Image (cartoon, rainbow, N blue to C red; front, top):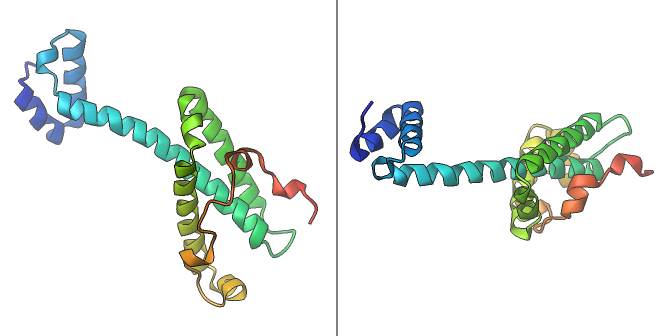
Length: 169
């Protein structure tokens, strides 16, 4: 399938898979002048962002469940799901780090930890909206962002290693 750069740009919107395969063919054939560079570079950048977003999302899950364990666990019978979720998220993060080791250094940056914490807070708020009795008991109402620490309360090491269920209550 012979393509011009303009028709490739149109193909990007109509048939992404075919667009990928055609650009791949052009690159393999060293027909660089025909490659849709603008969209290709954007897609490459998006790939990196998706990997980082996955790490942030998994760290947010861990922080949400650590925070629940530390602050909103009503009894010894509550929390096994949180524990499992924390351990599973850590396992998935380690897999991502194995495939992309440079993500580990990025994940430790203060801004990234803060983004993950802000996501965790949104998830905590949503959880309390679904648990209004618990929200009333702890906050007197459904909490907002202002009811949680503004700065991320966890270090990267805690996110990856802290196991509060091993500590005595």
